[in-house]
Picture 1 (cartoon, one colour):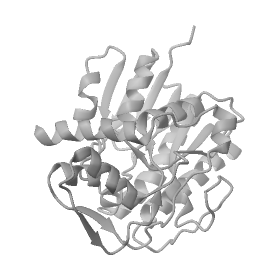
Picture 2 (cartoon, rainbow, N blue to C red):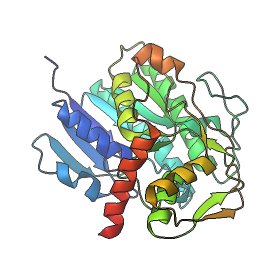
Picture 3 (spheres, rainbow, N blue to C red):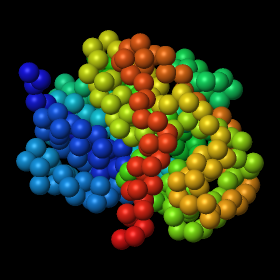
Length: 315
C-alpha cells in the first residue's frame, strides 16, 4: 500500500498546479496548495476546498515558508508572456527567490523538491528537436529574458543545492501544455485561438503562422511530473516533458476553427521579438527513465479545452 505523503504545491491554484493537486488528492496524499493568486484563481481549486486532505494558503514564494512536508512541487511563476512581462522584475524574483526559498525548505525538512522548469531555457533553439544536453540560444537582454533567464538560474540553484547540501532534486522542462483551466487572457496560442473563435473575433496569427509548436494535454503533463517525482534519488533530470508531435500555428488555427465553427477568420500580425520559430521536445529520456509519453490526441484535448472555455465565456 502506498504511504500517504504531505505534499506542497506552489502555484497550486494555477492551470497546471490545480490539476496536479487533484491527482495527488486522488492518490490519497495530503496537499498544501500555496498561491499568491497573481495568475492562479480560487475558481481553479474551489471544488477541492472541502476535501479533508486539502489546504489552501495565500503566500508569495519570494518570502520564506515554514511548513512540514515530504515533497515539494515548485510551480509558482507566471508562465505566459502577457503575465511574466507585466512585471518582469517580480517574475525574475519569483523564479530565483522562489527557488531559493523552496530549496531552503527542502533542505530544512529533508523533502524531495521538483522544479517546474521550461522549454524556454532553450530560447530560440538552433538544435531541433531539443535534447536536455542542448544549452540553448537565449537573448539575456530581451523582453522574455526575465522568464527565460530566471528559470535557467533556478535550475542552476537546484543543482548547486544538490552538490553543496545533498538536497533531493528533480527538474522537469515543460513544453507547451494546454487544457481546461488555462487563463483565458494569458496570450498563449491555444487559449487565444479558442477564446477568439468562440467570441466571434478574428483569430490572430503572428507572421505567416509557419512557426511550430508541440502541444501536450495537461493530464499527460501531470502524469509526467508525478512519475519524475517518484524516481530514485539519483534521477535528477533535467527531463523534457512535452509532446514530440510538431504542428504549425496555422494548422492549429485551422483545427480550432473546425471545432468552434467555420465563421472564424484569420488576421496576421508581426512576429513578437525573440518568439521561437520552432519548439519541439526530444522525449527519449522521459521514455527511458519514466516510461512516459503523451497519450491524449490533440483532437481530443482541443475538444475538452473548447468545452471548458465555452462554459467560461457563457457564464
